[in-house]
Image (cartoon, helix red, strand yellow):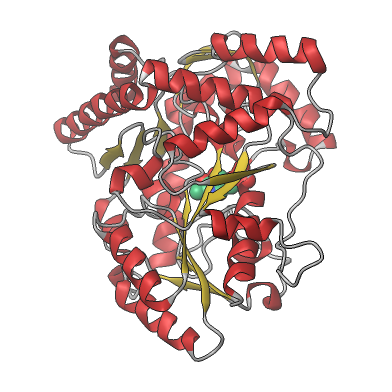
Length: 441
Ligand code: PLP
């Protein structure tokens, strides 16, 4: 009731706008991240660690747009560079711009597995491109992903084919043929991965194994520390390409991404989000030179070409933002600082959970913080999957987290569906301590 009262009494302008939205926008929201409230709040200002809604309420922003704004919202040094570029040439011409080259050079310098880079429009597009590239380069068709991992919304990889679906992201309208060469393994189950790779060897072979290096959904289902190295070994044994989806981890876990952190070099890296510092059109495929050259093919030769496109891909606005955002990440040590804020927050949340005896668990990988209702479901997915009713249980928990998300909002905290938190460079100790008091309330 208290939460409902907050939304009814203090968010009247948002409510009116969301009613208006419902008449012209299906469901009244354009973005999946805007769902975790009785109605979506409309925001008007963002700066650093804080947001203000159209009713003038102020929030600590732990959504950070779903990850991209590692430097904090609306970061001034990058904004200034974007303004300068727009004054010079506007946002797009379709022709080569120096910032494309500068951004590619910078990413290649930092990411161990990236020798060349091709910019695309989004993480979803980049994953699609990576799959096509892997198939073209290897001449094989099978791809293996990890159950529960999110690689965007393309037909062939859409969400959670095998792990409990929780309702919201269930996807229909996809013919069986579209996923006909996609397989899933449960997180941490290397035996299953080996079996699939062996099975595929007799049927044309595996082109690529795709992983989110922290585990599905940015570590919502965490993988063990040695998992990526072991997947690398299996890929080498079976001649499959290893694709790291670093859309979330790229730059957020450090300038060298999760591949730098784990010391595992993928053949293809998919980037998005932080790549353009929160500005639009964040997506790229990076990788080994010989593989990347399959994007070009040999015109007039027999070399095959993996075609990718995108009218607005690699526009100068995205490139100037990305280039200066990464330079600022270098200069400020953003990943490490945001990571320390994540550690402080997570420790504080653990203390609250313990002191109040709550059936929750909090854990983090630097600036990516998880707050869940139970550790067991998360950490031992493969055995629990065999239990009946796990799907219902997952739905119930997800619903509970979303309700908690609304309660956090009413206490001035914006999270991702009540269960994930992204910290940023702007999260000082004072911001985190303020947030912890609000969580405790
Ligand atoms: N891959 C991962 C790991 C993601 O988390 C996301 C988006 O959240 C995507 C791919 C898709 O990226 P985009 O939303 O830019 O299409």
